[in-house]
Length: 107
Image (cartoon, rainbow, N blue to C red; front, side, top):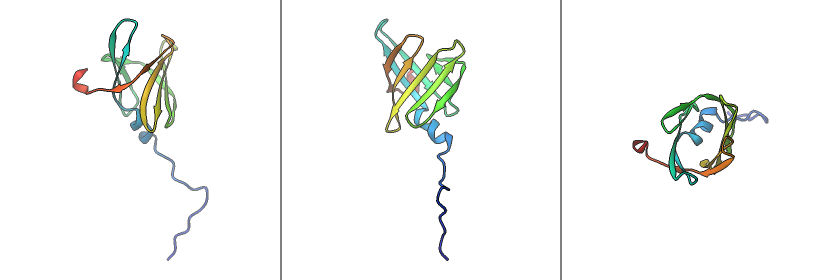
């Protein structure tokens, strides 16, 4: 028995696969005040910064970016290349920070 493949009926990538691109523990350096900040993104896309929950909501999610709007009206945009987060843009500071993975035990 042959399988019939219908055009236009492709499987869509589940959103948790996209969330998995960004989920993890990351760090970045604020060179203005010589501080290392820790960013945690969970699989449900909740975000915490330096151990504090960041209330807000996800505006956009795809394989290249996660855009988060906090309750103050500022955007955080995490950019990814080849399914690996590389930077975060903080609209509140109008700065881009390079992300590096970090061990959760260092938080």
